[in-house]
Image 1 (spheres, one colour):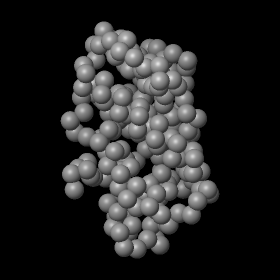
Image 2 (tube, one colour; image 1 turned 90 degrees about the vertical axis):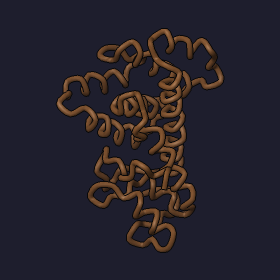
Image 3 (spheres, one colour; image 1 turned 180 degrees about the vertical axis):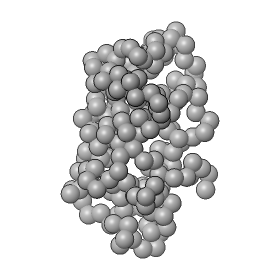
Image 4 (spheres, rainbow, N blue to C red; image 1 turned 30 degrees about the vertical axis):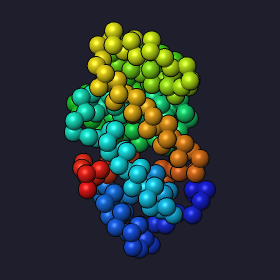
Length: 198
């Protein structure tokens, strides 16, 4: 059970009911991480807009599976099993026909320094995400230059930064309020690619 009161979708009325309708995913599921915002629906709108923008916007240049991998890595570093489970499943869903690579990548995300099958550019991004998670005050221009040398553009570095920063927020929302995966199907992204434009 979460640590605070949650209004279930079946009990929602007014604005909350309308927002729940917009964030309902496949099979009619409203993820528990979204339901935890039910007492303050405006924060649910903000959370959903940020989530869609950093992970599911069509103009992203990095592969969706890798953005999910960053989320898994950050969640593991933050001891957030809820997000690690959900986004591991999301990562797998983004890698159809690549079961062996998925399993190898998932195993590496739990290591102190992820290696193969991640590319040098992906490893540089994961190293940056780890430092941003563990020691954000120690980030400097050298960390950005390391990603440049590995072949990442400034736009891609921004994508890495935003995904890592989003998961710092999401992980603390989840762990700080006792959100759990009970009753959820994992890895199903809520519908609505253009959420932030509505």
